[in-house]
Length: 275
Length: 364
Image 1 (spheres, each protein chain N blue to C red):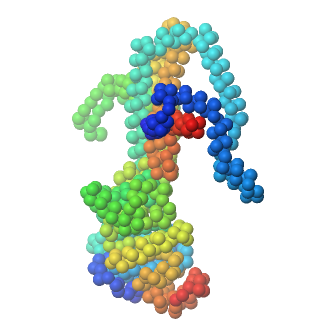
Image 2: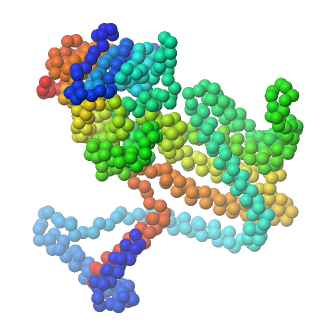
């Protein structure tokens, strides 16, 4: 895929107006290894993009550049037209100060592979922390909203439990509620089910499935191909720091154009997998 | 728990109408003795009957579970107890310990004054040392090369100089610099000027020396604690837009505390006794006071014992604090908090009360 034309996902079902992500020619190296070799991708408001690919293909790094957890070495990312992590001065992009970056991040929720819940805070405290501190919301109000969110992920009755008292699936659902508490335009999921027992995967996927119809833009890195087929507007296949191919799930799974894509899917999709 | 047990006891009393309330315990004890066999066979009755009738599939449902016995634990306990008694006996009976002298000096005004000075030095330099240490640790972990090298150099200098030398240097600062002034460098403009000897008293030199030394060590302890917290915690907090200072104090530090506290209390307890080094400044804290006294009275051992007993007392109090503070910070780190000694004791008594009740019921 050339970097000139930027793959665009199919228009979303819900008429969302915010959360337009534009990734343009993003490059990133760790030492001598170039992990992103000029990646471009557009996800329209309310779109659901699922990024798949082998380990080390740069999927997670790409995701982490979107909220500036990873600084890019080249290229840029905009959300609703606003640059992420930088501002234009003359013909240069100056990195924003930490305070402004943090402000931008409140529009971008992130869910991690290892949940990264704060273990010394209860589920409820995990969810209320950021709205109170980062958005200066009133405590009682944040609490009320947090309980609603915990209810939405099916964990209202575990609000006072500490993360270690919860199962992996429950922890990840709390982490999703925590990300939702900032009312983000965009939600990033970095392999949200990879650390879970097979039995617990579905309870998390069900929550994400429900979010996919809510109008929030979702960008999901996952190895769950069946799930990708169900929720994605666009499936993006990455390998060796580049987007090899992208398309609507039905097409890309049934008729991958590139040989690399075909060989990957032939290994990860079980023969019985019904396309 | 105990109140729950009481209510159970009361209701049991009510359901047993025959004995007068006061006679309840004696009655049940007697009943237990008399009808023990009967009660036992009644409890095991159904099980026994069943196992006798049905041959191959044994039914153990009526059996009582008996925990494994630990006979060697009892032997060990007895041996340790004998050792303790022997030591206690020799301490009590050997007249050369001169307990009378110990008792006489233990609460003497001069000793108590020294104790207060020791506590004052420990509290002030411990608190200041750890606050400064926290700042140094954050500097060392910051992204700024300037802050990192300043912090590193501080720790390097203060960890490589003997505390004794630091003390004497601070106290004799007046010899090196007669006056301390604030003004524009390389000009004659002075906003403020003071004689060094008036500024640096014994107390100031002691606090300064102990604090800076303590800061260098606690910086490393706190840094170690912070490093032990998973990187993902910082990332998650950053992704949620939580500001840096809040990330440190609310997310990382409470988790780091678990690693910091045991070593930090080591340091504080070390500092309690370490304050005795200020004797080089002729500062009359506990140890110096005791030395002065025994140089006069020649009762060396009993007076050292006075100081030791006070140190033991301080350490004991600190250990209790340590237990509860560590317990506080283990919130969420363990699935369920272990019981405190107090709660254990309560549970012990309440379950034993319950057992006695059961027995009483069985007997009836």
